[in-house]
Length: 187
Image 1 (cartoon, rainbow, N blue to C red):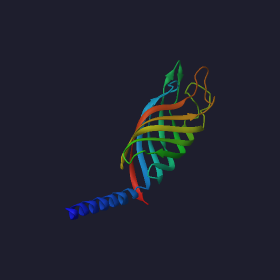
Image 2 (image 1 turned 180 degrees about the vertical axis):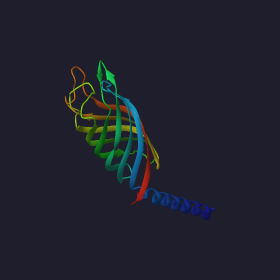
Image 3 (image 1 turned 90 degrees about the vertical axis):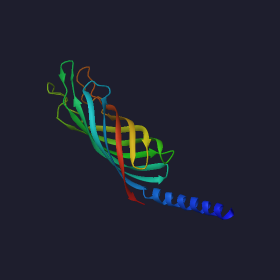
Image 4 (image 1 turned 135 degrees about the vertical axis):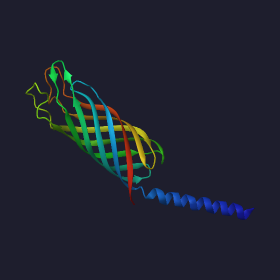
């Protein structure tokens, strides 16, 4: 009976060490994803779709730091006679993630600068210039496992009063969902 207990204990220790070694392969990873959502507030855009690309280093098993970029296309809409143009956001940001467990709930945010690209004017029937960018933030809450991330996220680029037309504020913000895949790079 003692030999069986020792054998089971040895197997548990070995499997724990093997699982730990496997998780250490995920210390460095590339994160690739897609996202979509509705523009908020929706004065000059209706919806957005995009791709995300990031590099993450797990400082501890529960905390990751990295860099993030991507491309988010916003679809312009007509608003009280203003024919708003489509535009895009290309972020360059620091990535922060908190993982309380190896699989389950997580919190994160990207913080940096969002470059706004597209037509030079806010609308086809306006002479107001489109902003070129601003402070970018993308907080998210979601579910993760070793390979996948599923998130509810809010994207915002702060442009101040640039791009405002009359009573219409130029807004670059969206509430959406994202799905991402993690590619391990090793330790």
